[in-house]
Figure 1: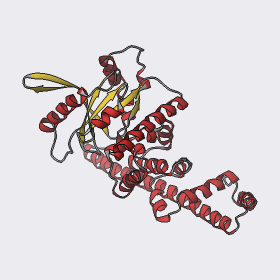
Figure 2: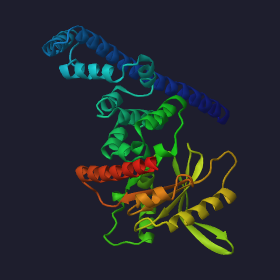
Figure 3: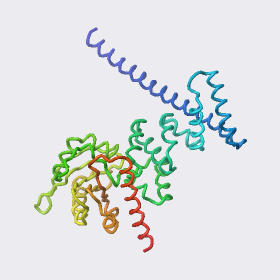
Figure 4: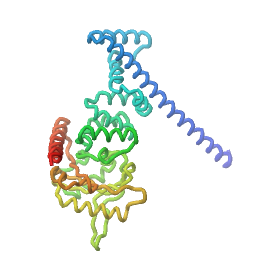
Length: 347
């Protein structure tokens, strides 16, 4: 094959390959949609039947018989448990218009995880984040196990405000900082010693940069370490600089090994204003700052009104905690945060 024929062939192969790959994606999406649609319709039929006869024993009887007959007809895959999943699916997602949009993007395996979340707001959060960020089922389960929802600012908001924000995400695909930034970051993968400095913390993050970005969330890109900013002929150094693609803004991160101090606000404001003046590109939003501390002081953070200044404060957890201890820690944080909000409302 001469060079001309080889180039022509390579171009043809590339174009045919693209068609095949697009077709495989389309077939996969179609199969997933058909499976979820089938199970939802089955669940809806079972739900309708159970509503007509409200006896609990009748429900068990009808599902058992249905499972037996479907297994005889179609073989394995139609257990009583599977039919219970179908019923739960239709009960959890009763609106056909909403669920039919979701099953074009999420698989049946996603739905089986989502529909067993114990709080509706939490389920909606994971559903929309899974859709927007295209999580695999493994990633979805990891996020749930790591209590992502409980660590985001939206979980601390009054329920109606949280619902409005999630609705905006559903209808406009609009991610807000409160959906992206957390009040606790789990950095146990850094393997820090009992005593360490801010420099040790920064070095450990850079060694484990991929895991750190995974913990930050999808959309973050690393830009610089120890970003130099010269102001009044004095050099200042920002610990870490990232960019968030969907927020379209720079994210400045300062690392602190102790408790949050009010002085950190002024330091971060200086960095953000410098970034706004010298690094911000056309079409970007204002830079946002994240101060990562070993321990936060919630009341000080609230009094300083850091959100107005585009500054977030979060604690990092450097050692692996059993889930019950993590849950307790987050619950205590949430209780204190709600108490602060209630005091704020009373003023």
